[in-house]
Length: 245
Image 1: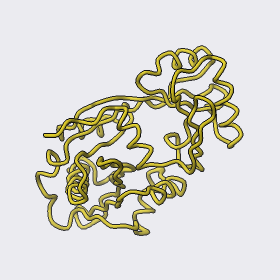
Image 2 (image 1 turned 180 degrees about the vertical axis):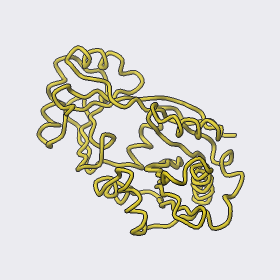
Image 3 (image 1 turned 90 degrees about the horizontal axis):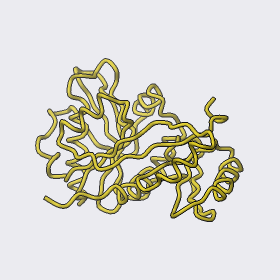
Image 4 (image 1 turned 135 degrees about the vertical axis):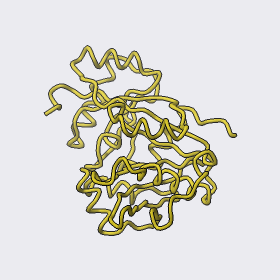
């Protein structure tokens, strides 16, 4: 069994498989242009040590893009976290990062005609994502991913079961935008999707399967733990109190 990627490596996988519209350096910051793709592609991150005096530079850059003042706080960013807290930034959406060797998930094929992979997504998948709050800005993120990628579509009880997206960066396949329809939950659909993603990733030569989910999503955290995936890191966001509305 291969060594697991570190949290630092998986931060790069997130950027590679769920990319911002643009990335640019502003002093010690990496500024992301999200174009409506959500927090993950809009938050600024520190590329090294920062001081209190550096924070306005990032704030100005984000506001110039029409984006809220939003920072992603990663392991090692404890000093920045404290500085932002003192400036009135609230913690938003703590996230867990899970990973496992592909071969440990690609152990059992989902039932026949339950899950499929295809690119590009079908209209019904776009509709399922939209119903789950994953709109055009996030669909655009999927299209921007440059490595091998696919979408997941599921059927259960002769009806659509859900959808998801998988992309590979640096040998790691990451699952994003996993959406199981409400009436199809608690029936194994999420597990089938993860197995399907692992078999696809294995065929593409990926060594690991990873996923990120909010710490408050109890069902998703339970699923990934039950699959034997390892919690290797976290991150959270800090958003300025004036931008919380």
